[in-house]
Length: 370
Image (cartoon, rainbow, N blue to C red):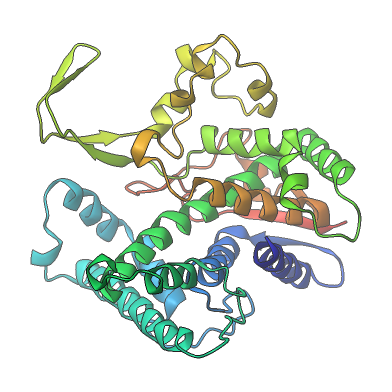
């Protein structure tokens, strides 16, 4: 928790610097949140300080930030190739820059992550080593310490296998967190009543000047409902996949073994017969009255999926999301820019094609220091 609150404080400090002495200004939150979540990823998963929010990451054509952007914020043609590649593996055969740039960035991310793994193995071999960034609470350090405790070499993961696992966590946890925070800022800007209630609920549970504990964070029911409603109404990840391991029938449809299913969690979260006729309205309070309805089923909320393949980082993602929201809501008021006002109540157009639910062209929000 300490690492997350420290990262959140860094984000708040950057926003404060961006609004300047006047204490009010317009911020491109898409760029800001990508940097923030990459830094959180570096500290909590890899145990390294990337420094993107402070502009301290080493430059170059392929640093972490550049590589992340190339992989997770692809231009339209590259995004289209990624979508087609899900069904027909064509990436390795296309000698065009839209594809080659993606492949270079992916390879660079892997090389950098593997280098971090190798260095951490050496560091942990030193007596009394303690990671200065995470104090040993990062995923990589804990994985390696667990591997070191295994007595049989055959039971241990290789450095390449550990790298693969870390990249999975990075891929699943970075872009989706940035997207969720982006939509949270949008909702707070266009719904001042929700913003006011959220701030009041948070401040009534936390003691001024003290870092909240996990228990205090979880005790704010309206914050929990607000974050769940963001993930329901603006599900950050548009799709995921499952393969049928045996013949089965779902609601009268036969699915042969080996069939790859494309699952769209946003469909269940935006279906009127599940959530009611107000399904398209943003209403955190709906979570207080689900008993006896279709939405009462845990399978109605698909942001993290379910069963043995549920997102392993679900709890961490929710805590990260809440901590960042708390930091921003208690330090700033959110307001609409001319662009948002010009939409006349309509929601921003989203990117297409794309793997995530993201406003096309990013989003700008007005911040005012409290």
